[in-house]
View 1 (spheres, rainbow, N blue to C red):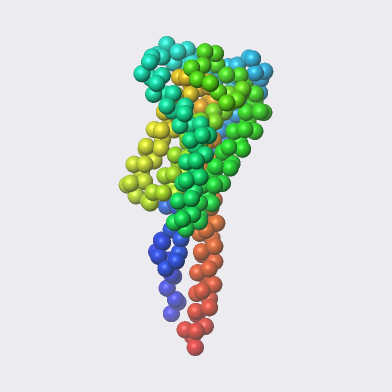
View 2 (cartoon, rainbow, N blue to C red; view 1 turned 90 degrees about the vertical axis):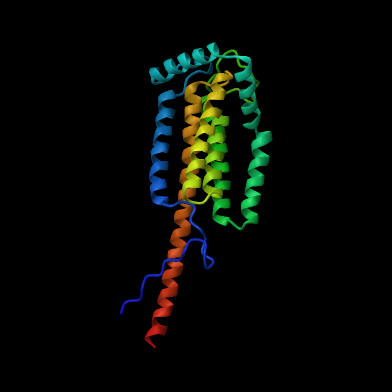
Length: 252
């Protein structure tokens, strides 16, 4: 008789809980988002800073200009006050302590896989934004309502960080099921609100924030999927080794 296959319950008997219900499907989704991000990078292209919002694919630049004009027309005291709060919450003075605190909680709970993925997302997203900004050196829109930490516009650091943090928090802290799905909707809403606030405040073009959301989301999704794939493969090898050791004992 062949021994029955042993599949450990998630989070039991010392086995780590999976970060994703289907990490390979998440890899596929992340790959699609990365492809869209690359498409935006190619569509925007590299141009003199003062020529913004001109883009390699003209339609992107035209939409950027039209959308910016539309947001200027709807500016008002209430929306401006709300989106200035978003501006502060997206700055490093808030996001860095927040990320450190969340990482500390994961480590305290011994969620090593989630902590590793969370830290990698932080590193990759921040480095990617800085490299892209100095590569594209895209100029910002006129008439900003808030100050900016840097000169260049593309991609939006606030939009990238907002999406990366929101997706990472959902994947790291909320278990599978209806509760996680609700928080995924909340994370998407937050990422889009942060992105819109950057255009409304006049510090980014629409394509800046679109690329930022795509970049932050894809980095988070792919990183968690890859970490889960590695953990899954290691666990599978461990189980196969244990079963191989157990079979001779049963035969004896």
